[in-house]
Image (cartoon, rainbow, N blue to C red; front, side, top):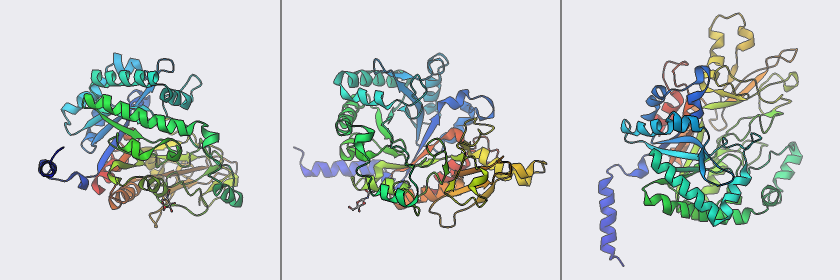
Length: 442
Ligand SMILES: *[C@@H]1O[C@H](CO)[C@@H](O)[C@H](O)[C@H]1NC(C)=O
């Protein structure tokens, strides 16, 4: 047993080695969607364009790797890019110029899809069930990190997500109070076992990765209920930090007929009480004293719906009778998603002199309460054309959330994603304006 004096000395040494106490510096964890490297057109993000962001990030999370459904080994989702074109190696080589940066390989996210093009949580659950599956993953992941020089592994584990609730108004409220019933058995009958197995998996991985000095982190996906799958104290003991899935509460894919603010900071009137940053955070805080291990997710994109003539003209959310995802943006090409530069461009249209001005211009509605978030819209024309509603973050709202992180004494911010911020400075001349805005606030 160590005498107390040694423990004290040890603590003192640690304090002296880190003159700026870690507790005072919030982390900025930056997700990097590797597929942006091979996007067609103006949304393609080259390594040169990525670099200016790295001065602001403490962590770069490379998204995403997947899992082989037969062998349960980690696998690249784009071997041609990762290996043949050496993208893994080129990314981890960025550490030479940015020695402060830790670069983690993330597995899962919403990118590891099955043959039907859907996320496949059953694979992520089966992996947990048998020691040989866990060992296969563990050994392959450890080898992959070592081979390509990653600093650690991020588990963006594809647990089954809660289903959207379709109920409206009073019925919806009655339903929400019923939520205890509407839980584990319908999502995953073996949730209790999977929760235990995940804690075991994380502990085993930790031991393996630590041997090579690698880090281990957890990224919660939106709509994964930690109550079902995460033994919080057990998991937190073995990960460096957790990125909470505090975004995408409302999306056109989940809620095609109703547009709403995608990531309010606080609970909104007459909405699902769990669909806000504060609630999600509080759940974790209720199970751990260590707020420093928790990061809040902030996006650089907006979620966009198509408004119909029946969606009204006020724009005031929630917007009913929407017609699913808005058409893809000119740069990112993904229906229902608009990057910050795309939104910025739409907001600025009225300043230009194009003759389709009226069709293009979005009206921005701010949030003086600083609690719920902002949106922009244009009502549908009489023939039902051109309606658009987008809920999004801008540099100001992102700073409000970063301020929340500070005030709550949390670990930091998990930023989704570098490739959807304005990395060229098209909007206001400054590159990565949302990222910067978060950094200045932390
Ligand atoms: C956190 O704990 C408090 C006190 O027990 C409880 O009232 C609250 O509902 C909990 N919050 C969450 C989000 O679990």
